[in-house]
Image 1 (cartoon, rainbow, N blue to C red):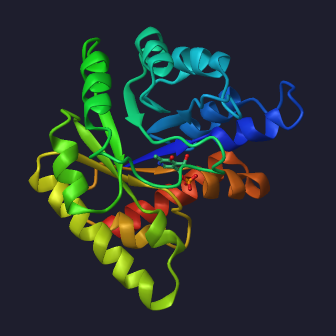
Image 2: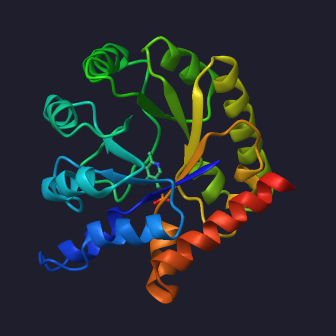
Length: 240
Ligand code: PXP
């Protein structure tokens, strides 16, 4: 199972002063030294964290999977076509949200998604869709031509006590449905050192996409170690 590390929050810290440090590019290199299988950045319309310059340099220095998270807009599709990341993950984007709040509204945006995927496929880049753990959403996602889905684990991560088990069951069945639909299946959002094992032990998941908890731990123990510790939990969960 791959561990792909989202480094947006390093850019958030840099943008607090609009200076040059900490540089997300340097952190990407440390994450890879710590065993990350890929780097994810979300280039937002408002450029609140990752900047165009970051994406450009990351494309030159990331030796494994560079995943560009983005909204399916004309501007972002143009950037993806010029930059050529290894994977594009389409997400909904709201100006006022603190982080991506939910999966894509695939039903109402089916045409827009189909067109975005067609254009990105045109230069040979696979496309993943960020989807809530719901059967109907996955079935519609299949009709868009996407190659992969990333199952939204945020509701599982946020759930308390008895609801946690219920939300985990929803993630487990969504992974199964997505595999039956012949998607490559990723998962992410809200995963941390305390809740990752349950998701990592689900059979068939290709990769976990994790940001905030790794960057938060890296503040105390350094990036390489934070990535190594997360990877160890994932590998142990798979073995059990
Ligand atoms: N996957 C997607 C689609 C996201 O939007 C995010 C947040 O940027 C993540 C994964 C990572 O979430 P977190 O920072 O909570 O680990």
